[in-house]
Length: 266
Image (cartoon, rainbow, N blue to C red):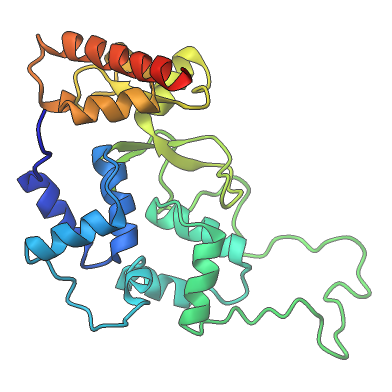
């Protein structure tokens, strides 16, 4: 296929991403977005050769992590963090903005911004329990949420959005978030659709699109292939190949991967 040339889409992604990411994070995001295997060094060289700059001062290591959160999200965390644990804050934040921020990301962010929850984990000296002298629990007051109350800004199950990092469709599913422990989270729709029809994706395999269009998540447009096969398809430019040629490119890619494995085992 010859030497790989960066397309306008590639360069636009690098130019936008470099404003909020360092070279290492940008390389990872670039490879995730386009299914490539560029090293940090290669990405740095490309940035230099195309005159792409980050606009940051030398040694400014924290700007990319700070910009992981928008100004609106920063204000939300600052105003909502009082009296909450990190996991509670992460769950509240993800439900409010439809994101998948981890407790560790929230923890590091509030530490850098010196936001405090006011929680120490200990009762102050002389503390008296609120229910001293009562029997059982008090009833609800007029400001209490009624049973079954749902905040008006909570997105319902099945809500969809486009992931700004990779362009895939994300869908809100009733599965426990492995990072925050929250009972729902956003998941790649094409993976969810595949698993609903065929079961969990086996280790080392990925769900790809037959027609190469990542927003077409119908089951008949999904196929299960190995990561090596996906990487080889991307090398062959499968996404941009004419529809009538795609089956041949797919077959060739699978054959090449199988051949490489045989040669490697000898």
